[in-house]
Image (cartoon, rainbow, N blue to C red):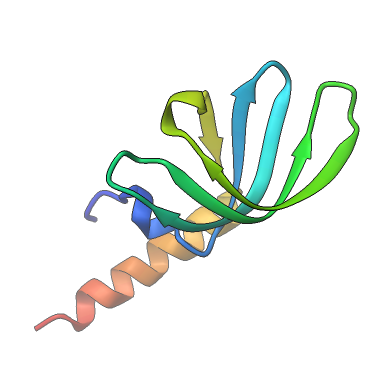
Length: 89
């Protein structure tokens, strides 16, 4: 299996840890050449467990501490990539 790249996760819901107890949850829409992320339908949760809707957000690469995805979503992406690679002649 070929390694997954960040652009393989476009369309997936990601959980972005920004440190300081801030976590963004949103759909990855794009990644630019500097690895900045464009997320849509973003909800921000802070350490106090309050949550706010932010909409479309650009996340600079240097602010990202970690990125997580659900296991179910990861398995789905891997299966789609395997299916695509099998179709290439």
